[in-house]
Image (cartoon, rainbow, N blue to C red; front, side, top):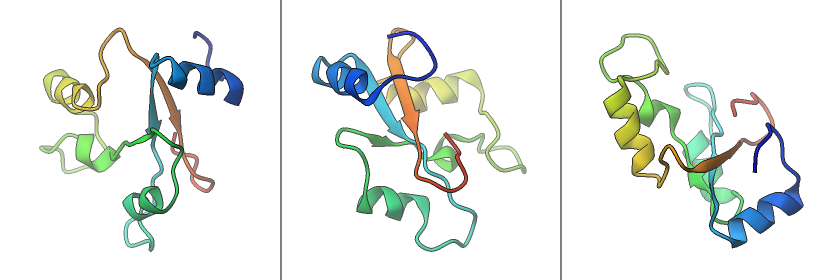
Length: 99
Protein backbone atom coordinates (compact mmCIF):
# COMPACT_ATOMS: atom_id res chain seq x y z
CA UNK A 1 0.00 0.00 0.00
CA UNK A 2 2.71 2.47 0.99
CA UNK A 3 2.32 6.07 1.98
CA UNK A 4 1.00 7.74 5.07
CA UNK A 5 -2.57 8.36 3.93
CA UNK A 6 -4.80 6.25 1.70
CA UNK A 7 -8.17 6.91 0.14
CA UNK A 8 -11.33 5.26 1.40
CA UNK A 9 -11.49 3.38 -1.89
CA UNK A 10 -7.97 1.98 -1.43
CA UNK A 11 -8.82 1.03 2.15
CA UNK A 12 -11.97 -0.80 1.08
CA UNK A 13 -10.02 -2.71 -1.56
CA UNK A 14 -7.25 -3.65 0.89
CA UNK A 15 -9.81 -4.80 3.47
CA UNK A 16 -11.64 -6.89 0.85
CA UNK A 17 -8.34 -8.57 -0.04
CA UNK A 18 -7.38 -9.16 3.60
CA UNK A 19 -4.19 -7.16 3.16
CA UNK A 20 -4.55 -4.76 6.06
CA UNK A 21 -5.41 -4.62 9.75
CA UNK A 22 -7.63 -1.67 10.61
CA UNK A 23 -7.21 -0.19 14.10
CA UNK A 24 -9.57 2.22 15.83
CA UNK A 25 -7.20 4.15 18.13
CA UNK A 26 -9.82 6.44 19.61
CA UNK A 27 -8.72 7.82 22.98
CA UNK A 28 -10.60 9.81 25.58
CA UNK A 29 -9.32 11.61 28.64
CA UNK A 30 -9.67 9.80 31.99
CA UNK A 31 -13.17 10.08 33.37
CA UNK A 32 -14.72 11.02 30.02
CA UNK A 33 -18.07 9.48 29.26
CA UNK A 34 -18.47 7.66 27.06
CA UNK A 35 -14.94 6.29 27.16
CA UNK A 36 -13.00 5.12 24.10
CA UNK A 37 -14.10 1.49 24.38
CA UNK A 38 -17.74 2.57 24.56
CA UNK A 39 -17.31 4.81 21.51
CA UNK A 40 -15.78 1.88 19.64
CA UNK A 41 -18.75 -0.27 20.66
CA UNK A 42 -21.19 2.36 19.41
CA UNK A 43 -19.50 3.13 16.11
CA UNK A 44 -16.46 1.86 14.34
CA UNK A 45 -15.52 1.03 10.79
CA UNK A 46 -16.47 -2.53 9.80
CA UNK A 47 -13.59 -4.90 10.53
CA UNK A 48 -11.76 -2.47 12.80
CA UNK A 49 -10.06 -3.70 15.96
CA UNK A 50 -10.06 -1.48 19.04
CA UNK A 51 -6.50 -0.40 19.89
CA UNK A 52 -6.58 0.22 23.62
CA UNK A 53 -3.46 2.29 24.26
CA UNK A 54 -3.76 1.63 27.99
CA UNK A 55 -3.98 -2.11 27.36
CA UNK A 56 -0.78 -2.03 25.30
CA UNK A 57 1.13 0.45 27.50
CA UNK A 58 4.04 -0.47 29.76
CA UNK A 59 2.46 -2.01 32.87
CA UNK A 60 5.54 -1.19 34.95
CA UNK A 61 5.67 2.54 34.27
CA UNK A 62 4.13 5.10 36.58
CA UNK A 63 3.55 7.30 33.52
CA UNK A 64 0.53 6.77 31.28
CA UNK A 65 0.72 5.36 27.76
CA UNK A 66 4.42 4.48 27.81
CA UNK A 67 5.67 2.07 25.15
CA UNK A 68 6.24 -1.35 26.71
CA UNK A 69 9.24 -3.60 26.25
CA UNK A 70 9.43 -5.01 22.70
CA UNK A 71 8.28 -8.50 23.71
CA UNK A 72 5.15 -7.16 25.43
CA UNK A 73 4.32 -4.90 22.50
CA UNK A 74 4.90 -7.73 20.04
CA UNK A 75 2.56 -10.00 22.00
CA UNK A 76 -0.15 -7.34 22.25
CA UNK A 77 -0.18 -6.41 18.58
CA UNK A 78 0.41 -10.01 17.54
CA UNK A 79 -2.89 -10.86 19.25
CA UNK A 80 -4.46 -8.29 16.90
CA UNK A 81 -3.10 -10.14 13.86
CA UNK A 82 -0.23 -7.72 13.29
CA UNK A 83 3.29 -8.82 12.37
CA UNK A 84 6.28 -7.21 10.67
CA UNK A 85 4.64 -8.05 7.33
CA UNK A 86 1.25 -6.47 8.10
CA UNK A 87 0.00 -3.21 6.65
CA UNK A 88 -1.83 -1.30 9.37
CA UNK A 89 -4.29 1.55 8.99
CA UNK A 90 -5.01 3.53 12.14
CA UNK A 91 -7.85 6.00 12.63
CA UNK A 92 -9.75 7.62 15.48
CA UNK A 93 -12.93 9.52 16.04
CA UNK A 94 -12.93 13.32 15.93
CA UNK A 95 -11.61 15.06 19.00
CA UNK A 96 -8.13 14.40 20.32
CA UNK A 97 -6.75 12.99 17.05
CA UNK A 98 -4.94 10.21 18.88
CA UNK A 99 -4.31 8.07 15.82
